[in-house]
Image (cartoon, rainbow, N blue to C red):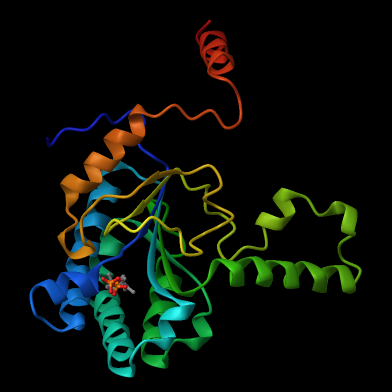
Length: 251
Ligand code: FPP
């Protein structure tokens, strides 16, 4: 079905793009072919999210652990990222998308980091949609890095320990302005979060579509959003409380 209810579009969608290798293996192709096809799926999803009015889209493109993959595969992934940044530049600019990145970016090769840095700078004032590329990313790293930055401030006397609140903690994450994740999607049928945005996904709704990432289309995205729209998000409250506050808001 093509149509989608535009009233409750998830503000922040986070996607673990899994299954590129298995997609290729099934076709007796090299794993890298799966990543190439996966890049095409990235394009379609970015475009669709922008059109739907999604506020932020986070994509798990390369984890800290992925550095341990065969050199050839790592190199191919880096080249694909570079190509994506080059080919999508004008579309990102034309669509008022703000590109940000999360992770240990200093580990990326210069040819990727330079492109990333310049597109981040070029799009810094855009306010259409935040596209958060998670690169050399680890959720535990993000939390440890935030703790370290906070500890440094405490050491310098700029922050009192008792002033550390959730809000203050959030301000030390890689991209503090990211809203909480509403919908987390992991393709390929694997039922894990693999350290993806642990702080931000606390109250996310999860979807695990049984499709390898290269085959993920706009229709799968719409299906996930439609399912999200049917869920009751209670945030620790009871159903009755939510219904009562709904009525109060309307009166
Ligand atoms: C996981 O599948 C996927 C990755 C480690 C890389 C994701 C990269 C892309 C989709 C393409 C490049 C990204 C952008 C933003 C242009 P896997 O290789 O672990 O699959 P498997 O579990 O089937 O082996």
